[in-house]
Length: 489
Image (cartoon, rainbow, N blue to C red):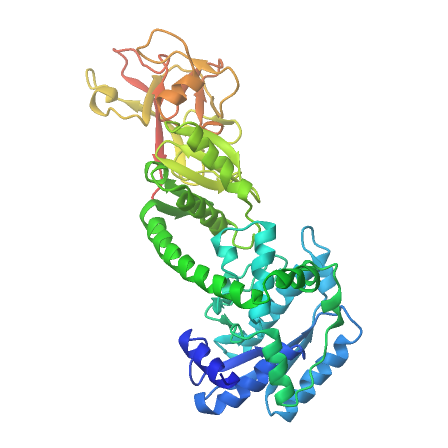
């Protein structure tokens, strides 16, 4: 079938480029991008497209400057707008965990995104083709991947969904799509198109450098696989299309699960534990990965181990409701918190409950902050005979101490071996056991506040269990009232 006919059908089928749109075309001067720019230019008058080519000099090869000039001259000859920039990719690759390949990729997409933003273009078109699809799918397979990676490159993706962690500019690129109109074509078909239209591409010699993973696949592994199946490119391309369809169905299903059982908060993603336990492992794994991605949108490599340690804990003890921390990745941890499975920052402090990191005095009278919204306040209250406030206002968030209790009191996190004598129990219990009984999630226990007398006795497991020390004489007419309060958001 005619190249332009196939291209137009593919663009229409996948709604890649709307009519009358401004389109940024990523052009390097190689055969793929050259054919893309030429072909889109042929179709542009029928669709009202306004093309603008963009070329990034990665600063890695001496000939890159000449290639950038070639693109600029070509754009001028074809009456197409052009933007050219240079990036210091080697400096980006000097960051920990960033390869030269990855740095070049991130720099290129960020550059294209900035050009699209500046010109108000909703679409960026790049020259990825069927052979690139084969390489991408095999790279993901060899590195380890789920369905999202094995589907290869979709025809279009929101640029904001690409993670560019090496960049410090903070671009989000909302409303811009990256389109791949050449995915139906093989490399040979693109070269045939260039020859048919007397296009003379520039050749990037770094594509021969087999120190790069993709180049080793291209020049060594894939030719050997084609000895087994000469139709490898078509076969794997069809596999990618099939997996993309499966992924779309699963993704819709998992988005519905996410909406039903997940609550996203600043610094934390909460999954309803009972509902999560009832899911198939594949759905559990996908939701955990998405929770990590929500908290770390720029983190690209969420490995198998990052989710499996949590799933292993759940599988090993189906009744377990409290536990952690389970280390995930990039400073995130998971906790079993009774009704919830929490994925959160390692130093997360929940606004839902009172928390304290270091000991603070509580003057009598006075107050102490217990996190961003909670307060512990002490004041003297008086009452008429027989009208003691604990008879009228029973609350787990209020206690009363004798009026002659020496101050200041101390509010602190728990310490190893902490014990107290709960009111009405007649025995000493470990704070650890009381926290278990009161279903305080493990993630909150280390910083849960304890109210301690000047003599070092624990008076109150704040908001949960009071000591027998926290009672005024029945005939007293006044007492220190200690109240746990939460300010309105």
